[in-house]
Each structure stands twice: as structure tokens, then as C-alpha cells.
Amino acid sequence: MKVLLVFAHPEPRSLNGALRDVAIHELEAQGHEVRVSDLYAEGWKSEVDRADFPSQPPDERLIAVAASKAAFDTGTLTEDVRAEIEKLLWADVLILQFPLWWFGMPAILKGWVDRVFAYGFAYGVGEHSDRRWGDRYGEGTLAGKRAMLIVTAGGWEEHYAARGVNGPIDDLLFPINHGILYYPGYEVLPPFVAYRVDRLAEAGFEAVAERLRERMRTLATTPPIPYRRQNGGDYLIPSMQLRPGLGDPGTSGFGLHADEVATGI
Amino acid sequence: MKVLLVFAHPEPRSLNGALRDVAIHELEAQGHEVRVSDLYAEGWKSEVDRADFPSQPPDERLIAVAASKAAFDTGTLTEDVRAEIEKLLWADVLILQFPLWWFGMPAILKGWVDRVFAYGFAYGVGEHSDRRWGDRYGEGTLAGKRAMLIVTAGGWEEHYAARGVNGPIDDLLFPINHGILYYPGYEVLPPFVAYRVDRLAEAGFEAVAERLRERMRTLATTPPIPYRRQNGGDYLIPSMQLRPGLGDPGTSGFGLHADEVATGI
Image 1: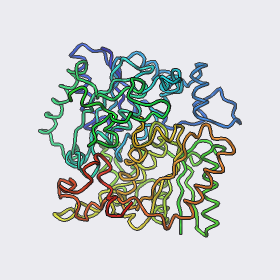
Image 2: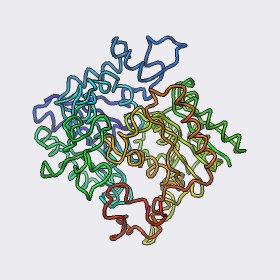
Image 3: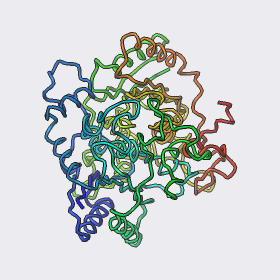
Image 4: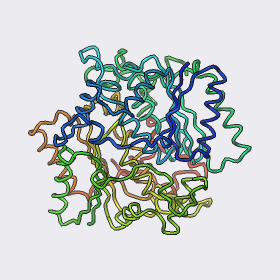
């Protein structure tokens, strides 16, 4: 398979840098072809602004959604963004690797999403009717491809557990896994998360690395998170509410949007 | 009161720009003192990188947490970051205003958090013992102050409801409200959210503006989200799990960390 790894850490000599090399090495050993977008090394621009839309008249009010649509339609997105879109279309698998900073992605990676996920490419795709609300959440430009996160966290795993004070890690990552990756069509694999990384000694590293290698070996076979397809019948249109009766009564919040029962997970 | 509004939109002539002016005008009419950090206008740097720690030797491995601690302790954070910290200490109320992009903050605002919320200032504060796990989640440098979000979203309110396909808005904002604002001590007010903003006509604007004015008038009196204090007895230490028996059995995920019953909300 073809794998794109988007890497968002400022220090190559970091744990993240070491884990990236472990992942790439294992992927290549399995015969996969790997490309890397190293956002810090490439000096990625994080901010959506007027410079992203060079064909827009300089004194015209900037409406980001409309400008994104116009630039995508006319092929006038900036070269750095077009190069990333080309890589996303090339790859069978997208991996986003980052340290969890303030319970989310570092700004540079959020800026990669904000700028690369253009209107007409990652959103604003498909027809709206009484049977479908665009191609999103399981459908879209990137359908048929897989995606997963590689995340490092300074905190303890217990603090990210179902009743841990930080909130469950799967819920903290839901805006990324469901909102950013599942939205344009990716099948999203469970994330790889390493905890307490500030205290990880040499001895601890090898166990984490081996766990990551195993995930790289099973990239094609790991069952994705069973998010519900928007247009598969589970949601009312146009209110996009989960139909009454669906979802475990003991579940609330984000958990409703994965159909754990159907898949036996 | 003293209010700091951090504004993260690239276009002054936007709905966000108009709502910002509405908020400022109403706050000043109420006798509050307002300062604004306009991140785009000020050319805010989004990325945490080596340039943030000028006193670190250039060939030394960058460990962001350690570098942040050292720079805060020695007063060698960069001037832009120190200016924002000074404003945060000055303000009684912090307002973060932004368009919801991909279910989170624009990169430039995430970069404001990543860079300004330094170790020793916003995290890494307080003692760890068998009775407390640092000063965080309701305690910390910014305790006694209030914070709230002003958010615009393109999508429909129904899609962000309890069973809506995007996930509940309160859960989508939990990593910000609880993870970024409550963490260093703020009391966090319920967010102000405007939906379907891409279709908001002139007539619709005034209703949204009036709703925002009302929130600005009640900034001092609106009850905060009743998040549970980490060191208040609800969590086991050091696992930081919510004690057995606490939390509505019909609630899971983020909802467990607000004590709605106790406050009658």
C-alpha cells in the first residue's frame, strides 16, 4: 500500500522522531511505499489567510469557504496545498503523527487541516436531497482509504480512561477521528497512543516501539472504528439526528455515533 | 471588570468582526475595560519551535515542556508571549472568539494556546501529594477569573445537538472549555454559539447580536459550567478517576465531569 505520514513535531531527535522512524522502517519492511510530510522541516504555513487565495482581488472581503471553493475549482490553491492534496489522493493510508498539546493537535497540524482540506475536496462534496446530506461521514473524496493517528501524551493513561479527569482519549480524539478524518470518507483505525512519554526511559521505548510496529504490520487488517455512515439510514434527514431507538441507552455524547453492537466490538 | 478578547479571524469585515464589535461596544457600555488580541492583525506566530526559546543552545535537543519551564522561570519567553501572559494576568475575564473550523479552533488560536500557556504559568503548577495532583482543573494561576467562548459555526444547530451527527457542541468544545480553560483555573461560562452563519442575512444578524449583547451584560452573573474540581474529593489520587458512584449512570464520556445534579442545572 501507499502510506502518507504527516509528522508534526519540531524536534527530529524527539521520541516522536524516533517513533516516526520505527513506523517508516516497519512499513517499508512490509513492502509499503511511504511518503512523509514533515511540517516543521518544510516550514508549513499554519494560518488560513488571504495569501492562500492569490486569485482573489486584494480589496475583496475574504470569505474563507467561498474562497476555498473558488480556488479549488479553478486550480488556484497555493502550490504547498496542491502538493498535499496530490499526496492524499496518492496514498491508500494517511497517518497523522503528533504530540497531544492541550488535548489537541499542535497548531501546525491543525493548520495543515485548515488549509489542505479545501471546499470541494474534503467538504462541500455531493448532493443534498431527502436521502443524502452531501458525501460526508463515511463517504466523500477520500472514501476507500484508511487513516489513523499516532499520538504521544505526557499524562497517565488512567487520566484518559473512561472516568479519568481529562476525559476519555477516544472522546478527546473524536473531533479529529470523526470530524476531520471520517468526514471526507476515511475509514478510521483506532489510534495508537503512547502515554507518560516525558518519563519514558530507554527500556520503556522498546515496548512502545514494538506496539507501534505491530500496528504498522496490521494496517490493512485492523477493523476501523465503526462510526455510523451519515447516509446509511441511521440519521434523520435534514436534522441529521440519530434515529430514536438507535444507540445504547447507557451511552451519551460521542459514543452514540459508533455502532459498537452491530460489529461486536 | 477587565476583559481580554482574543480574536482569531482573518477578515475584519466578517460576521466575526461584526460580532466582536458588538461585544466590545456592549462591554464598554457596561463600564468594563476591554483589551483585544487580534491574532491575525498582529501577525501572531502559530508554531511552537526553537525560536520560542532563544536562551536554549541552538544545538541542544528541544524538549518543549522543559524549554517552556526554563524560559518561564528565567523570564526569557519571547516578547509576544510575555505580552499575552501579562494581559491574561490583567484580565478578570478571558473571551476567545473564533469560527469553528473542522470542529476546533483555527490553527492561529491553537498556536496562541500552545505558546502562551507556558509550563509554570498554565500547567506544571502546584504540589503533587496524596491529597492533590497539582493546581489544575479548577485551581491554578488563573483561578478566580472567568472565561467564555464566542463561536460561529457554518452547520445547523440540530447537527450539533445531543444526538446530532457532528456530536454535541458541548462535547466538541470540552477539550477547549475543560482542557484549556478550566485546567489553569478559569471558571468557564457556557459558550455563545451562532449557527448557520454562512446563510445569516442582515435580518438574522440583529437577533444574534442581541443574544450576544445579553451574554456580555451577564458576564459577571452567568453561572459557570459546573465542572468538578480535581482536588475537591470527586477524584481518586493518583489515578484521577471519578470516584465510583459519582455521575449519572445514564451519562458517559465528558458529561461525567460536570456535576449538573449538585447545581441543579
